[in-house]
Amino acid sequence: MFKKLALTFFVTASSALAADALPITVLDIQHTISDPNLIYPESVETDVDKMMNNWYLRNYALLDSMTDYRKTVNATDAEIIDRLSKIPAEIELPYNSIVRNIIDMYTNRRRSLVENMLGMSHYYMPIFEQALEKENVPHELKYLPIIESALNPDAVSRAGATGLWQFMVPTAKGLGLEVNTIVDERRDPIRSSEMAAKYLKQLYSIYNDWSLAIAAYNCGPGNVNKALRRAGEGKKNFWDIYPFLPAETRSYVPAFIAAVYVMNYYNEHNIAPALVRRPMITDSVHVTRRVHLQQIADVLGMPIDEIRALNPQYRKDIIPGDIHPYPLVLPSMQVYAYVISEDSIVAHDAQKYQRQLTIEPSDGTVTQVSDDGDYIVTQKTQYHKVQRGETFASIARKYGVTASSIRANNGIKTLTRGKTIKIVTTQRTPRPKDALDKAVENIANVEMGDTINLYPDSIVESAVNAPVQAQPVKATPAPKTAPKPATKPAATFNPAPKPKSQTNKTTPVTITVQQGDNLSRIAKRNNTTVDKLRSLNGLKDDKIRAGQKLRVK
Image (cartoon, rainbow, N blue to C red; front, side, top):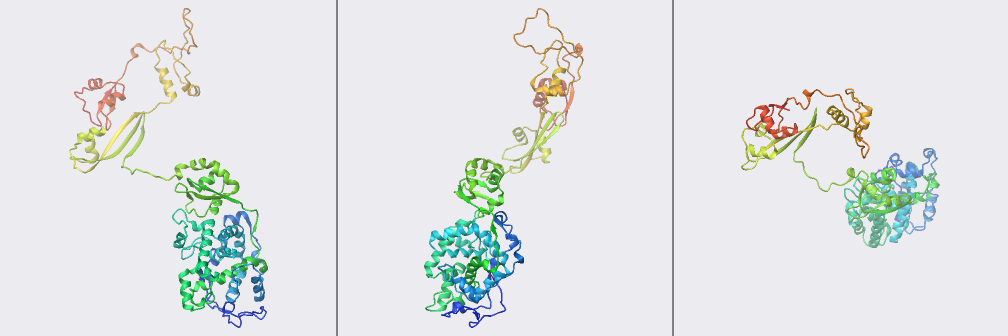
C-alpha cells in the first residue's frame, strides 16, 4: 500500500546518474526512468514509538539509544550501483532515480524504522526463508514484507489488506487461508508466509519474469495484463509497462529494490540495528480443545503478551481447537509444559471461558428470599397464561395459593383466555439454629433426673467459648447398687427442678396468616394439628385468609 507524495525534483535521463556514477554500457529505461509523482509505501508511515512496544523488541532486542544522534551517511550513485551488483540475487536489481529516492527515504528520514525492522528480522526472516525455500523461489523475496507491513503481523492497510504479507480477504481465502471472527491466518507468520510463497510462484509461472510477478502481487494479474496489452508487442518486463501501471504499483518494484539494498547495507549508512539479547527458540503444538490464551498464561505462568506476539492469528485470544486442530507457538521450553498441563489449562476458570452450547430463555420467574426473624421467607413471582376452561380456583390449586390472592395481585375480577397473570407464592421456613442455640435449648428443656451428654462434638467449641448462664446444678451420685456400665457413661447432672405447674404447659400465641398459608401448613409449622387449630380458634371449616389472626399452642 502506498502514500502519494509530489516530489519537487525531476531527474531526467541525462542526469539520472551523477558524474561519479559507474559507466553503464546499455542505457535502457530501467536505469534512466524518473517519476516526479512518486508514491511511497504505506508501511513507511508505521508509528515507530508504537512499534517499539512490540513484545519481541522489548524482551529480546536491544535498541540503540543513540539512534537520533548518529551522523547520516549518504552514498554516491556509483557506490549504490556497485553494492546492488554484489548482492547474490536471482531477481534483477536495477538502479535509477526512483530507487535512489526510496533508499534516501529509508537511510535518512526513516532510520529508526529501519533499525526496528532489523531487530524484528531476527525472528521473522528465518520463517520467510523456510517458506520460500520450500517453494524453490528466490530468497530475496523475503524483503517484500518490509515494504508491505514493516514486519508488523497486525498491520492493516487503508484498503483492508492485513498481516505481514498484506493479503486482502478474497486473495487469502482463495489461497486457503482461514479468515473469520476468531481466526485470521493472514496474521499467522508461518501460514501466511507459506501461502505468499505459493502465490508468488504461481505469478511467476504466468509471466516468467520476477519484476512482473512482484508487480502483480501488488495490483493483481488483471492490472498487469492490461498494462502489457497497452504497452504493445515485445514489451515483457516491469519497466516496459511502467507508464501503464496503477500509480502505486509503479513505485512497488523500486521500493522492493530499495528494501533489499537497505537491509543488506544499513551499516554503510551508520544505521545501528536492534541487537538480539538472546535467541528466541520456539516450537509448536496442535491444540485440539477450545482454550483461551489467558488460561494458558495463568497456568504456565507466562505473560499473555508473549503468547499473543507468537500467535497473532487468534484475534479474540481464543483457540477453537474443538472445531479442528490449530497450532500454538510457544517458547520451546514451554511446549512440553503445555502438553502435560493441558487438562489443567482447559479446566482453569472454565466457567468464565467455556462456550455456551445450550441455554434456556428466562420464563420471567423472580425469586426473593428474606430473613424474618425465626423464619426464612421465600417469595416467588411467576407468570401463567390463562387457558380455556381455567378458573381462579383451578389456577390457585395448581400453584398452592388462594383465588383471592390471584385477584389481588393482578387487580382483576374475571379471567380472560390468553391473558398472562402474575402468581405470587410465599413459603416460610424456620431459620436453622446454630449449634449454641441448640445446646441452650437442650439444657433448658432437661427434666429432673435426665441424663445428657454435656460434650456433643457439634457444640464443644461453642460451649467452651460462649458458656451458658443456667441455674446452679449439683451432680447426683449414682446408687451403690447401680451396675457398672459396659461403656464410658456420659456426664450426668441434675438441673434445678422446674415447678410442677410449668411442666408440659404450653401457652397459646397469636400468629398472622401469610399469603399462601392454609391450616395444614400452619399446623405442620407449629407442631400441632388441624383439629386443634379449629378447636382453639372456633373454626367451622378450613377457610382462612391472608392477614387473619390465629391462636396456636
